Image (cartoon, rainbow, N blue to C red):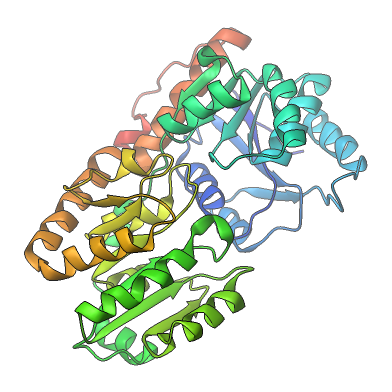
Length: 393
C-alpha cells in the first residue's frame, strides 16, 4: 500500500480491460488530468492490461491486474475485496459491465464509502445482463452517462433512478490534434497519390460499428467521383469478412484496411471526409477526434452522436443501416468542398468549447466532491495556487 498524503482521497478506477477503445482512452485521459493534490489514484483491470495500461503508467499511476480468468471466476471477488481493504479505497469508479457489477457488489462489503459506475452505450443488453444491471445499480451512489441519450436509456431501459444519473461527456486534449503532420510521408506510406480524395473512418471492425453499410455505400460514391480512396483504420473480429465484402463489391482496389494504428492523428489528417456508420453508440471519441482535426463528419443518427454533431453545421447525419443515405451525404460533401471546410472549422470550434478533456475532468471532480461531502462529510478547501481542472494546463 502506498501512503496517502494528508487531505487526499483514495480513488480506485476499475475497468474490465485496458485494450485500445473509447472507454479505455477516456479513463487514461481522466487519470492524466485529475487533481493530484486531492486524489490518490489507483487503476485496476479484470483482465491482462493492454496498451492503454502503459499510457496510464506514464502518469505515475499503478495498474493492477485482478486476473479474472473467466466469467465465473469467483476468486476475483476476493482479490478485489482485499485490494479495497488494503488500499483503504474511499471512491471506486468503475467502467464497463463486468467492472460495474463487481464494483457494486464488492465495494459495499469492503466498506468503500462512495461507488460510482458508468453507462457508456445504448446497445441492447441480453436479458441476463439487463437483469443484473438493474438489480445492482441501486448499490451505486451515482452513475455517469456519457450522453443525454445514454442517460435516458439508463433510466428508461435499465431502471436507474434519474436522480442517480449524471451526464459527463467524453473529452479530448484538443491541442494533440492541431500540430503539423508530414502529409507527404503519410501519402507515401499508405501508397495514396496526393491528388486522390480520401474518405475514411476510425473504428473497431465489429458488427456494432456498421462498417458493412459504409462499404455498401461506396459504389454509389465511386459512380459520382473519380480519384477516391477509402481508408478504414482499426481492427476487429469482422476484418476478414469486410475485406471479402469489398472484393464482392469490386471496390477492393480503392479501399485500404490500415489495421490498428497508434498514430490516429496522421490517419485523420489525410482524410477529407470522416464517416461513422455505427448501429449503436454512447458518445464516440472518434467523432470528437475527427472534429478536432477540422474534418467534416458524416455519421449515423444513433445514441449520443447528435449531441456531438450538429446536423448541417458540423456534419451530416443519416439513419443507420442505410447505405444509400450514407452515400448521398458523402457525395454532398465531396461536391461542395467549401461547405465541407466550413463544417470542419465549425466542428473544431465545437469540440474546443464543449468537449475538451479539461471540461470532462472538471465535471467528474465536481461529482466526486459532491459525493465526498454527502457521504464522508469532508470539505475540500482550495489551496493557494490550486485551479479547477478547466483552468489547469
